[in-house]
Length: 204
View 1 (cartoon, rainbow, N blue to C red):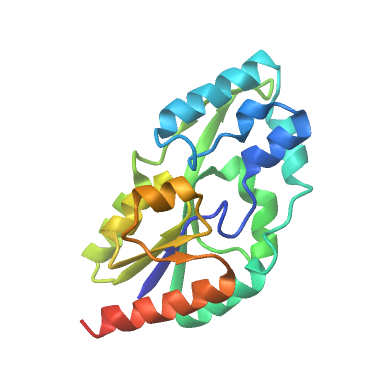
View 2: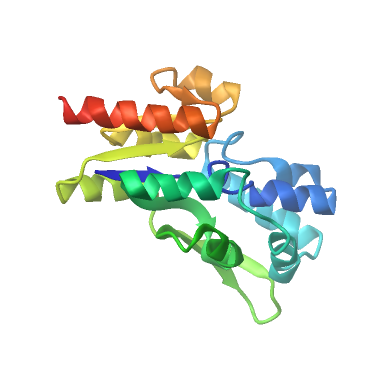
């Protein structure tokens, strides 16, 4: 059985939110917790970066100061003792590199940025659209059973596709829109839900 987790908001702080706090640009605090349409969100972010002449190194300097969420490292170590683990994220390899060492280099499927010779983020390149849901479906086609967990609108597809889905510390709007998923508000509750969900799947 596999556990497929979102990254930001589950194991890491939201990178765009931290960058917004550093720059004082409030609009950059919007995430997939607020805007379900990922392309709409990213196009707005790219326009803000261009308008303020912010480049990849500006974001990476902030990322270099970040650490995993409190308790995330121990939680991930526990999780790997109970499941095979794959991180499915809509972040970018150019962002998360420095943070992967702190998480002991988990397997991560995410996207890439298009960066020009001047360090300007010109565009983004998806691995594929709705990659989280499609990854879970592909793993199921290999006869894996999958539990998925995340906190945002862009996670709900993989939660619905999975054999079991869990929301971890989601905002109230996501809870309201997807009441079918159990909610964990901390890592202790998360562990309990993962184990109980695993048992339900195995007993079907």
